[in-house]
Length: 89
Length: 453
Image (cartoon, rainbow over all chains, first blue to last red; front, side, top):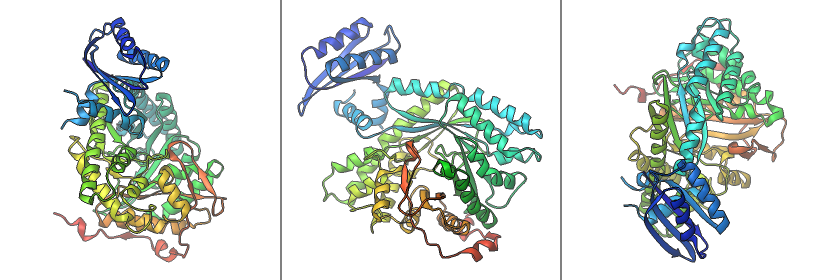
C-alpha cells in the first residue's frame, strides 16, 4: 500500500532528514523522492510504502502534519489512489 | 507512475481552491416502516435510520483523513414521508418530522431530506396532510428538509398543489421569522424532481431506489475558476469549454473514488455521482465568479445565460466520463445566498429574479435561495413556482423554487442563515397580481414533449 507525502513551504535545513526519520520510526519505507524549488517554494514529494506502518495511516499523517508545523512547512500524507484517479482516464 | 505536477495540482485544488466532496448522502427506504399506528411507524423509522446510518459519519471522516480530501457534509435522504402517512390516517405528520430530526442527530449527519410528497399529477392519501404540516414541521425541527414535486414533463403541472405551495412557503417563513425565516430555506418545490438527488434541501429517496444506497455530490467552482484564471483573456470559447471539461473530470473522479470507498466500507451499494458545481459563500468558490472569469463584468449582465449554458454543458461532458453512474441534479447550481459572486451581483443590482429565471432554463436547478420581500403574496409565490415548473416541464429538466420571504424585513435588509446557506439581500419581485390564474386550479396538461413513445 503506497502513500504520497508532500512537503510544501519555505526551504530550510534538514527537512528531508526529519521527514525520513519520522518515516523510519514508523517502519515506512521511502521508495522515491523528488524535490524542487518552485518559485522560491520548496516542494518535495515522496512515494512511501505504508504496508508495515506501525500506526494507522491517519495517525501517521497527523504526526507528519505536526512535524511540518515545527518546521514552518505543510506536510500532507495521503493514499496514492486519489492522485491516480484524478489524473488518469 | 505519478507525476509531480499532477500531485501538486491536486493539493492546490484542495487547499487553495476549495475543492471538496460536498456531500455523501445515504438514501434509506422507509417503505417497510409504514404502520397504521403513527407511533409504531416512528419507532421503526428511528430504528432503521440509526441502524443503517450508524457508521456513515465515522466512515466518511476516516476516508476524508486517509485520502486527504475534505468531505463537507454527511446526509440522509428517506422515502417521501407522505407515502408512510398514507397508511396512518390518524397520525400526526409532525411526529414523523421530529423522529427524522432525532434520528439524524443521533447519527450525526447535517441534514435529513425526505419530508416530502410527490403530487405532480394529484394528491393521494397522506399528501395533503403532509403539505399542510410542512410549516410546523420545519419550525419545530432543526435539520429536516422538505420538498414537494408539483409537476413533471410526463404529467404536466398540478396547479392545485402549486397554489398550496405558495401559501405553504409563506407560512413556513412566517413561523420561523424569529430565526431568519429559516424554515423556507429548507423547503423546495420541484418540477421533475430526481429520485437520487444527494443535495439538500431537495433530497429524498425515490421508490425505484434500492433499500439503502450511497450517493455522492461533488463540488468545485473554485477549482474551475482558478483553472480559467490561468487562461489568456483572448483564448477562444472552445478552449474555455475544453478546460472546464478537464477540470470537471478531475473533480468528478474524486467524487467517484469517495463513493466507491464509502460504499465498500459500509457494505451498501453505490448509487450515483451528482456532477454538480455547488458554490459556497467562501470567496472564490462561486459559480458567478466562473462566469465573470469567462468574461462578464458582473453576473446577471447580458451574456450570463450563454456562459452558464456553456459551463453547465461542459461540466456534464467532463464529468460523465469520470463516473460509471451519473444522476441527481448534475449541473451548475445558482443558489444566490450560497454563492459569494451571486450575493455581490444581487447587491449591486446586476442580478435580478427575472435574469435568474432565464438562467434556470440552462442550468441545474432553479430559483434557489432567493430572498424576496416579506409582503410578497402567496399567489405571487405560486405563480413564480408555476413559471419555474413550466421551464422544467417543457425542457425536460429539473427546476425548483426555494425562495425565502423575509417576513418583517424591509428592502435593503439582509437575511443571514449562517454556514453553507450563506446570506442574501432581499431581491425585488414583480407584485402585479396573478391571483385569478393561480386560483383557477386544475392541471396544466403535459406538453407534447411527454409523448416520446
